[in-house]
Length: 157
Figure 1 (cartoon, rainbow, N blue to C red):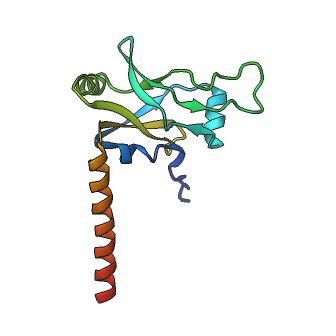
Figure 2 (figure 1 turned 180 degrees about the vertical axis):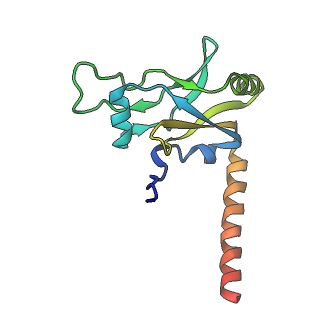
């Protein structure tokens, strides 16, 4: 029997600055409701989630301010680039996330949009607490020291 070739999870968009600007304490993978032209634009890698965030809208979780370019071959049924997009999470997870957001300093940051093995678009949401300037410097210093330490161990051994 032949093996199925499973495609790797392909990132359609990444928010690389999220881990620099926030301490990510927990992550949740959520489904996202998209139109057909949005899926085609995502597969082409034409999305930007750097300024995006997730929030409460009528008791549901929505991805807000995410920019997915209009599909160039789309017709009059094309989508609006920055429309709110509903995220699909379990009720208990949604309640837990909303409870944390109610606390001081927490926010829901989209880390990436990717396609899973079945071809569905998923959003990885991080529960983040904002970093201050000195926190960013300390993180950078620790990362540089670990890199130097690995280099020294590699050269000696």
